[in-house]
Length: 272
Image (cartoon, rainbow, N blue to C red; front, side, top):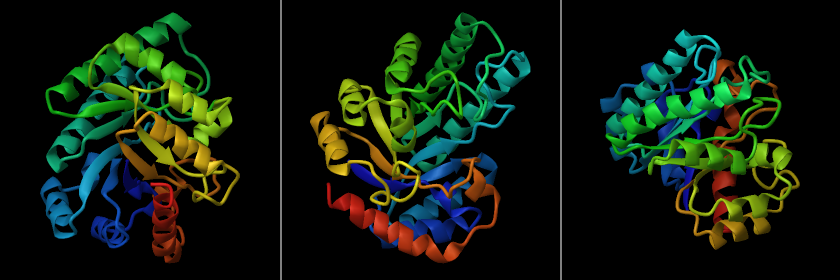
């Protein structure tokens, strides 16, 4: 298990400041925001070398015009174009993982019959998975809670989608905030996902810093160790706001970024 941090949480601060912070507190890697126009890959590679830290993953941003299952074929095609652009970014900066979702964030109703939407999800993510395979990148399907999507809410559903896609580099991830809402047992869901679960977003039940809520961290880490979890544990706490991209879009209090990054690293290392 390796420790990373989603710099979406740090809003729009200069990327060097984010990378330097995570290096200072001993993180293994950085999870970058899935907006390729934000970054100069050569600059990012230089900064990663300067601060002796890796690019771990890309957290894609699923806007309304990026949706693999939309009734609008242009939106479906745009979802594929967008995902391929983030795969290119991952290859350019040395990131191993790109996060995908079959629907736009906050889309909670169907536009087409279920079997048709599932077909489009399989076809679209498979096309992107084949593109990623040729570039040495793994795609991970992220389940969200029912208030952010209707299609993939639990790890078992993400596994079924990955099985239907049937590519060696298409796996799944978990997010403890979403799992707290949707899974009957977080440790049991982790254990059942052995061999598929290769990436995790880490926050407490209310999406605050780990240890600030009621999740049972010893049980969670026991399950991760049982399956020999091979990937990154990515800190992703979000301010209490309905929009999960709020911190990225709005000005927030930067004075706590160092404190939060240090606290989270120290908390997680107790279990590693």
